[in-house]
Amino acid sequence: MSKLTRRTLLIGGVALATAGAGFPKLDNPFTLGVASGDPRPDGVVLWTRLAPNPLNEDGLGGMPNRVVPVHWEIAEDEGFRRIVRRGTEVARPDSAHSVHVEPFGLRPGAEYFYRFRADDHISPVGRTRTAPAPWALQDLTMCFASCSHYGEGYFTAYRRLAEDDPDLVLHLGDYQYEYAAKAADVRAVVGPETRTLADYRLRHAQYKTDADLQFAHSVAPWLVVWDDHETENNWADEVPEQPDPDFLARRAAAFQAYYENMPLRRSARPNGIDMQLYRRVQWGALANFHMLDTRQYRDDQACGDGWKTCTEAGNPTRTITGADQEAWLLDGFRRSRARWDVLGQQVFFAERDRKDGPEKELSMDSWDGYLASRDRITRGWVDAGVRNTVVLTGDVHAAYAADIKADWNDPASSRTVGTELVCTSVTSGGDGNDTVDQTQLRLNPHIKLHSRRRGYVRTRFTAQEMRADFRALPFVRQPGAPATTLKSFVVEDRNPGLNAV
Image: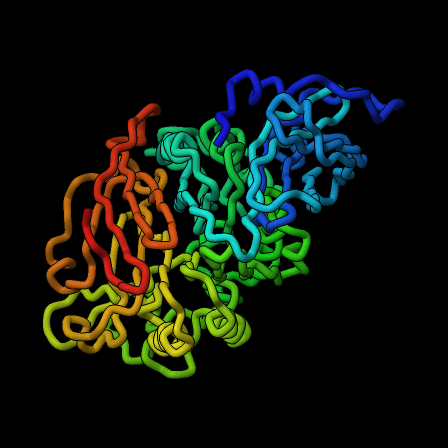
């Protein structure tokens, strides 16, 4: 894969003819960078958002109240000598002057470069990649991350992730946090706790000003799903964490701002309090990525949330996905012919018991709080004969690697039917530490790794195996930390279960 040079990122090639005559010229509107996402064999989403003054309190980035034409180009080379597609989109005030371009007619499994222009200003250059042809077994380097709190540390993990030259990046939620600034923060969070559309737009804009995050967005297409903090901590469908008569308006505002600031297809455009985020992305014949939404359709957490011994968690009617998403996922398992089926989702899937004795104490916010839902999904991929299942998870600010068992009532002797990889946080929780919860490992022998360091996970999928490297940073409360591989595992084709390497 070609490297993006500093000159390419900052200059973005030569300027094109100007547009928008008759209006005052904009100051540089490309302060939030560029991004791409949701690759298909013939196309990809390209994103940018115009914001000359990104931290304006009104959340509109200092843009005038008018539409602005934004020109885009895609080339086969970073010097833009071989341009293959170009066009113009209109950035509108009611979408915070965000731009979502969905070019098509590109070659499958190919690398491309893209850029935008508004007035005389040229955006940084982004690099992206289309998905391979449906029959191709093309190897894949994929990194995934979650939980990036701007105030609690520097986004160095995003830069280290980008330096690994991934073909694809997954973000599994908590891309931004709703909280106002705290005294312990190492970077100043602007604005109050996010409740209005202006609040959420401003918060997303501040995150996007981070150079390390911009770099990570510029090197590869992303697949994104939210967790709770993009809206509010531990929300569940229409139920907020604490009673709030205005929660649905808050939810609608959060969804609108999320769409405006992510490289999502127009099919994800929100309609009030609803947004179609779960979707399937095929990486040739190698992998199907089933991107899930475990917030928007779930039942409220059982027994008042938290860690509980809770019989209600076993209620067979409880769901974390909702009926429609569950049926969609099970149908995807039955139709799959991929070598690997990957679930990109938010909360811990495998069992995590933290209490000695016959009674279990489990997290009600995870799949442990929705036992029947988890059983139906697991049984679904087993009954469908899915060749290899890998569940990817964020949320818990710690790295885990776990075998998924067919029967959690007897996990020690039950057969392994899949693998779960859990990434730690990018910054949330601060520097982290090297303390390992030995009691948790003893009570849950299917868990093969636990680490509280910050970082991300780098994976390599081939026809023969999936390798996972848990990348860890020694600190995040200061910038510039190196990344080292804490532990590596391999899962062999048709042989579920983690093998340490």
